[in-house]
Amino acid sequence: MADYPNEEHVVKILKTENVTHNVKRFTLAKPDNYVFTPGQATDIVINLPEWKTERRPFTFTGLNEWDHLEFTIKIYDDHKGVTNKLGTLHAGDELILHDIWGAIHYKGEGVFIAGGAGVTPFIAILRQLHKENKIGNNKLLFSNRTTNDIILKDEFTTILGDNFINTITQEETEKYDHRLIDENYLKEKIKNLDQYFYICGPDPMIESIKGILLKIGVKEDKIVTEEF
Image 1 (tube, rainbow, N blue to C red):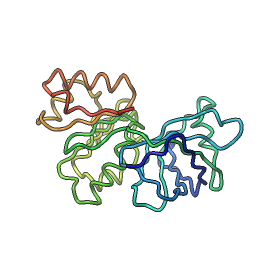
Image 2 (tube, rainbow, N blue to C red; image 1 turned 30 degrees about the horizontal axis):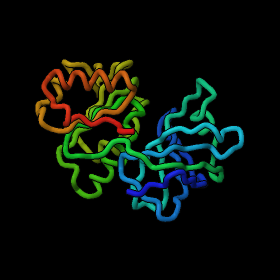
Image 3 (tube, helix red, strand yellow; image 1 turned 135 degrees about the vertical axis):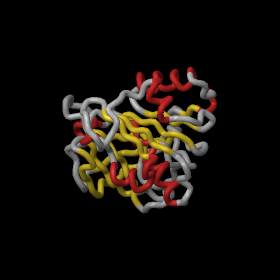
């Protein structure tokens, strides 16, 4: 892992493409000797005068060995913020990368629990494990509002097979569960409490699931959330 204290990297966008109806993949040029660990993040600034004071954290979703950087970002069109502006950018536009920092670190086999765009820290981790043939019995329990919101559905299916478990909260479908990730649901899906549990999503979801896991007997040192 390498850190770049107070260092800025101006990088060009090489390509943008839609992943879902409101999530975009950004392929960026990679600075020389730039090193990160799957699960880590950086602060990004849009390289335009009126956006220079707006820094936002985003997780690397590509692998460190790639010759480019990748970010998978949910675009919020309902307010005129950073992601809304990002959604208007194209190849040739520039972003500024800041420090590489903590986020979520893989500690061992377990259950990844994600809500919506909270899955992004898990993308690089699971891709790396898959590449190294170390995916083992890792599971991804993924909650979304609708089936159209599922990020990288085909790739996660390829990587995890039946260990890719989806639950949809605002739409009923025969293909996936129609449940909230509550205590009963976790008890149904999880039999081994002595594995790692990685949680990422909206703060209230993280706190709720962490509380449930502790209640049903998971040790605190087995619960992994984002580190800042």
